[in-house]
Image (cartoon, rainbow, N blue to C red; front, top):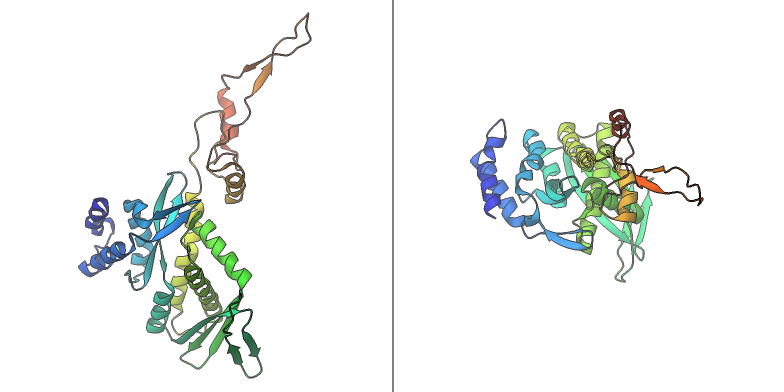
Length: 313
């Protein structure tokens, strides 16, 4: 906790424009309310307080630079795994309630409805009259899908739907491609909240594409902040090159290869088979002996460095 206090003390100096006292208080409260939040990584559970405190600056920067508020009512602190540092770093995201409130307060979106549909529910859409009939069932059943209705000030309404499979794929992409294997959705309620937020973002992308929102700048900013986190995650997946001829320099290793070796071998570096050279043939016995290759010519290292696939992790 002392390290977090030191980070917060020096936080204002980390930005070109010093943070106001209100901003510092909001960030401090956000940290305080989030320290005991749990997340899963592999088969183990961790807490936000296990994250490197100094990584808070990089997580805050895009939101501060965009002029967005950062407080516990709007933002959720998350963890992302940095593979070359073997540690967790901070990531941020708008909570579902925070995103809804922000859109209604700052844009021409008048109302947002997001509902889950279960297999035993009665649900139908009349596209001619633009009416939805949804009767929730009292009987428990599997999740069938999510739908979101966004009403604008000008009277237009937009319907967005996601199947349960699409929602689960979005959550998998978020945990693996954005948070690098960190799973903050440890309960069914947290999973459902993410599904709803994902359906809302799909609706926002539709509105942004059709230029129907009165304040596209904020909507685009929110979408870009979320999308750029996926690109940021790709960068931290690149592992450090090893200065040893027995390993490939795998700093440009694509994430798909990462996933294969992560599933098969775990988070380890996998060496090549030792290179060998044949000894002269024995005159009496037709056997081959081998000896380890101890040196490589200087020009050989360039071939390793140019390799884009890599094999380690």
